[in-house]
Amino acid sequence: MLPLLAALTGALFGYRRAKLRDGNRFDRAQYAAVFAIAFGLIGLFANIVILRAL
Image (cartoon, rainbow, N blue to C red; front, side, top):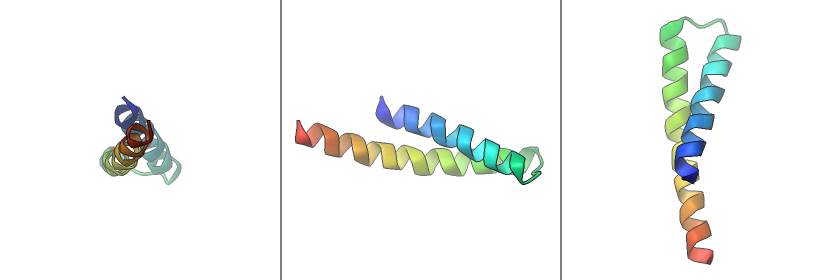
């Protein structure tokens, strides 16, 4: 569940960042996708660490 929430957060963060830079729709979608992948991977690694610690 954590990687999914992290990916969603990353997509929203990336979209907002591109919007603040006055990007067009393609820029916003690209930033959202890249940030979603990056945050999702971080969330996945955090999830693995948390589950190993339990």
